[in-house]
Amino acid sequence: MDILLAHGYFLHEDEHERKVMKPYPPLGILYLSSYLKKAGFDVGIFDSTFSDLPAFESLLAEQRPSVVGIYVNLMTKFNVLKMMALCKQAGAKVVLGGPEPPYYAADYLARGADVIVRGEGETALEALLPHLARHGMSGLEAIEGILYLRDDGTVHETAPRPFMGDLSAHPWPDREAIDLERYMNTWKTHHGRSSVSVIHARGCPYTCTWCSHSVYGNTHRRRTPEDAANELLWIKERYNPDLIWYADDVFAINRRWLFDYHAALKTRGVRIPFECISRADRLNDEVVSTLAEMGCFRLWNGSESGSQRILDAMQRKVNAADVRDKTHLLQKYGIETGMFIMLGYEGETMDDLNETLEHLKKANPDIFLTTVAYPIKGTPYYSQVESRVMSDLPWEARSDRTLVVAGSRSKRFYRFATRWMVSEVALHRETTRGTASLKRRVKLALNAKIGRVGMMLTQGERIQPNGIYRVIQPAAQ
Image (cartoon, rainbow, N blue to C red; front, side, top):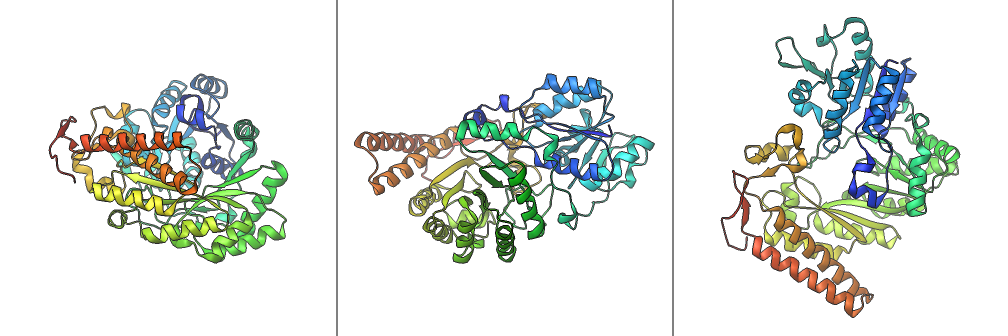
């Protein structure tokens, strides 16, 4: 075996996902597998989703791979550190990829990683694997797009590797190498419908300050509509899923491509209901009607805030009013709307939160999810607040999700803010529709009141450089 590919997500450890039960396979390493196999390499895959660390350890002992490649993000970091240790005990070299390692290269390399790949992994591994087999760790400076430790213990990053050009020349993900039916059966058991994920493009050209572009940069590259439609036809004939999840960063980013893709699907007799993520500025009546005809049943929009001031600070390049208009347009065509809302972005005030609440009431999305902003290393947002980023945990015990920014409001404040916002929006929706009973209205109003009072009591709490919350200003802002 030339390489064993793995990731570190274990479903049984994810309390939230065990309630949701909508898992998808790791398309990233499945793309790596299909590419490397086509290039003549012997590739194995450890799909950790339904597995555990003892199974990984047993596979290492059984297969004895010389190289293990592991995909890492901030969610899987802790498991990957354990997996790296097992790999070293088994005598394997460890190559890491994904959005997280390049920005913490010294930390990962100090804990057992041999090489870190920055950017796309396919061509990097194609060059790296023969080199490791023939020369070991000598002469790595000739391999583009990697980081490693020099003999003097310093981190060396080689020249950037060009992005792949023709994505349609790339073989489809190696879905046959994993138990895809188990994913589909899990969906079917918990939701009555099975789902399969696909990716038709790589990268996002937009400039949102909190979003990581670590792997694909600010590029946007698409497969041809014909190649994408051929894959959907094969998926339909091979797996016959009830749903499709388009995992592109911004689906329908190119209108002409979308129309051609729609035509290619119709020619092949393929229409599978799907959900996707897009942006308000990429939608118009023709696009939305096409999405509806194709089978789009839900579209997620990164609304993030109802405050135009905050949206501009995020460099979202969207207009809050347009987001509301496009939400109504989607609903007009029978497409369920979802919104992502980010609270706590740098400089957010109570006025901004009130604007976001009114935005949600006016837009009336079918569902919205909230998160509290946190700085991801390598993003413009992280650079903006870097001097105030804090954690009371050592690197190996924390992730970027646990980082806090001195001067920002407390987690307690945002728990109350979320309770207030969710309850207020639900009360407005159900009252407007006339679907809420008196008991339901009273409950929602009470929750909203508790959230609002909690916000008032905690609005002055700010994170201090010593990590302790202190009231440093009792003012409303």
